[in-house]
Amino acid sequence: MICWDEKWVYMEQQFIIKKGKKSGAAAAIGIVKGGFYDQNNRRTVPTKDLLDILGLPSQSPVFPSYIQDWIDAEDSLKAVTQS
Image (tube, rainbow, N blue to C red; front, side):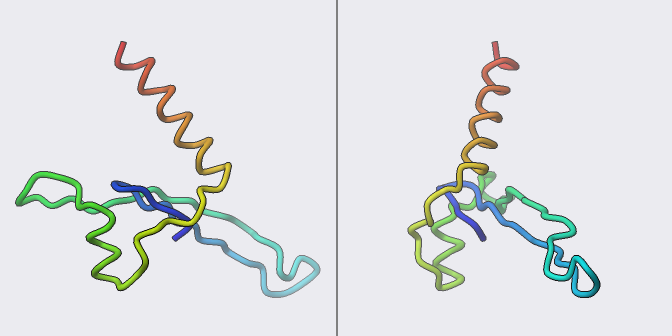
């Protein structure tokens, strides 16, 4: 988990090359935005509730610029499509 807000969790997974000339280099990096949906209450489960269950602190680390850029791009797209 990289960072989170009240609704979304941003996660990163890196696939690292183990052998050869490029050993230690990233072969691929995946970034995922996710959350959990409570069908009974028809809402997204607040991130704080998830963190409490996992025993993790509720304060997110600072959002990296590439994650904030992603969020800003989503907001811009929403503004265009909701007009």
